[in-house]
Image (cartoon, rainbow, N blue to C red):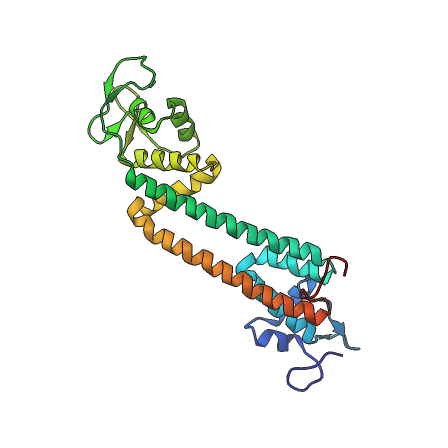
Length: 265
């Protein structure tokens, strides 16, 4: 029978719950979903837990901040079912995702630096098709047409139209001609999309980044968002380390620790 933390005999659901601010029902739910190994039962049907269950609970709660609830649950289930390799695969995926998020942040910061060094296109004349056809039109103050913008970026007008369909740029329409007019914000979004595309990022990955720029109100306010982004990535990295340490302690408690293991074990 398991030992109680206070009296050296056994642990009740409340003993596990109390130290983590959880309810006894949460402990039962964790057992039912496979986060905790199955508990023994007394002759009267009451659950009894051991130090192994306490270690499992600590591991799960430590895994959640870095991996998220769903992945942490899958990791614990895999361990409790004896599928350590599956648990390690899930852990690797979380680390790979964190690395990819760091690369995305670096790409955004690089794009923003490039934008600061690149002058914006001057407002002026240009035809909506951007290929010399159709009548000339003037965009007016604070705006430019698709042709001049595409030329300044070194891309074709069709690319700008594709980015518009993907939600990356939002030109307005001239009320008289119906031509697209790119104001300062639309030009900014097009330049940012261009830099990220040059970095190899797909449109579906660029869209949420540009949405962050719009939500921040431009590039300058985005600096605070980037600092917060850095902080959140660092916090996730540390949380992954903390979760790994608690999971290793649980694996040792189970007799299958990480250290000293070999592929043939």
